[in-house]
Image (tube, rainbow, N blue to C red; front, top):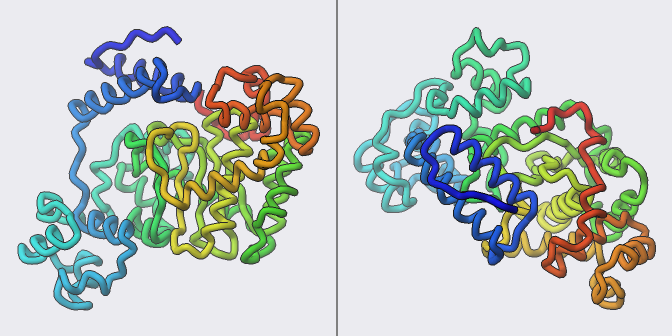
Amino acid sequence: MTIKIKKINTKEDHEEALKLIQGLMNTNPDPESEDGEKLDLLTTLVSDYESRTFPKNLPDPIEAILFRMEQNNLKPNDLVPYLGSRSRVSEILSRKRPLTLEMVRSLEAGLGIPSKVLIQKSGAGNEFDYQSWDDRLVSEMDRRGYFGKYPFKKHSKEELLNAFWGQFGSPPQFVGMLRKSNYRSSPLTDKRALAVWAAFVVKKSQKMRASKKYRRGTVNEKFLQELVKLSAQEKSPILAQEYLKEFGINLVIEPHFAKTYLDGATILSDKDNPIIGLTLRFDRLDNFWFTLMHELAHISLHYDSGINLFFDDLEGIKTINLDDREQAADKLAEEILLPKAKWEMSPARLIPSPMAANSLAKELGIHVAIIAGQIRHKGNNYAYLSKIVNESKVRNCFTHEKWNK
């Protein structure tokens, strides 16, 4: 890919750089390759421009405390050593009492929340500092119809966001409902956009009204092996969605937001009906099935882990050290799609040809695009079998969605 990289000085430069980043991410370059280095340089330039042009507002102090509680899996009682008593903790978190200087010092020393965040005046009522939300995010929510009957031009940003978050109370309360979250995402990810996306996925799932409750332990290797065989059929993503619903799992499709770089998420706030959200950020069948297997692996392996939300950027991250949960989910997904024993005995391991890929796919009873994707991944060469991978699309199964162009 021929790319001219230059310093970002204008809005037009910024938009062009974001398009170049998306194009590079679509090719999934090796970090050590020329394109991988270009991607790293472009993201640095974009981050620098945005920090200069769109200075970040400090978070609301109560939001900051709630976020740190969610990060560290803390309960209100755990704040007593910093705030003085259970009743005082309740008053602080409900915004009925301001933080004292002693509390600020204690929270900074004990929980690592910067004092410059804590000494700000907390947002009143239910506004939760909505004024600081990026106008571009709110506009994107409006284009997607997230505000329903509320006309965008006739209501303030605070009114629109209050309406959107109504059933959850607020973003912090939504995060609290989901308890601890696990992020496998780009450092450039907009966490507010991520929360908005997840909340809308939950709303979509509620409308699906699964007729059955999920039974703990249903998703196991045998279940996944049977499910992936649907991939060989026409419109297999729709079949997978219907199949999962029969077992109490709602598969929700919702395009990703700008600056979220998200492939999928597992939401376990309702144990009776786990939710899997997929963005189809990459319009490829192999990506659909790997992401779906990865999210289902979280249900299989981490249903009782105490983590209720897994955010996954599966194709954009190659240099970070993944935690044990993510490594385990990757391992199970890969074993389901292409068992290690089959791979080691297959001619495709030595000769990554279309013929070898088709032969292995036929043997396993799954779509050849999945095998092609696994061959590319295992060989760490994304030039292999591009025609097979790129011809197998997914978004055409979900034409009612508003896909990003």
